[in-house]
Length: 301
Image 1 (cartoon, one colour):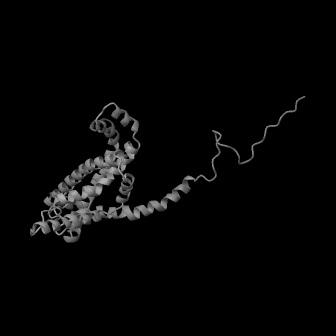
Image 2 (tube, rainbow, N blue to C red; image 1 turned 180 degrees about the vertical axis):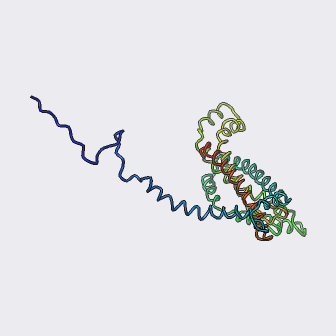
Image 3 (cartoon, rainbow, N blue to C red; image 1 turned 45 degrees about the vertical axis):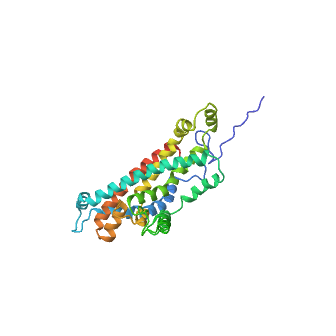
């Protein structure tokens, strides 16, 4: 007679949840996770959200007292605000287009044209991203300023009283400085995209007699479009909020939204007006940053 085999009794506390997986004792509980999240959220609210809330609150408090949307009506009706908004937009758009064109050309040369030091140049692009914007503007002042090297060389050779390079204190000088500084922000995602490109397609197209312009237009450019969109969106956001370049060039008559905030707060003591301009600038920036995040996610950059 066969002996009955006793089934093992489950040990108390060892029951497994449905599905066979045992819950780890180290997994954080919902209450514990909430407690861990509270300090960084509180710090974020104190350092970032609270000052922003104060700016929004101040924008609704005119100098006459009380709470009113009158500061917004005054700012929107002023010609200085409309001019600063237009200057900010056209400078940001023009600089973005210039960075896209120049960045695409330079990235093509670095990625596909073999020359000594190409890898070092690519690494320098990463280092360049950490430079402050006023440093590039200062370098341009040394070269193209009124008493810069270019004008000094011209006056030494021709004996003229002043050199011909007087554009740095104009909107075109600001545009040149922004393109110079922000172009690497377009090149970085482009170089990453080019490193993933299948070179076999390029070799096959070249062996079939395709010209370089056709290879770039039909093979390289379609692969680069997501990286171009991501880099261009980022440059547009950065140019919209750029303050140091406009300040250091000393461009006369060039007033952007960030410099208008500075002017109203520090020079005119119009704090409600400065807060109104700051709120508008933040709203535009957040909207463009949302666009940048969407494009970057789709591009995988």
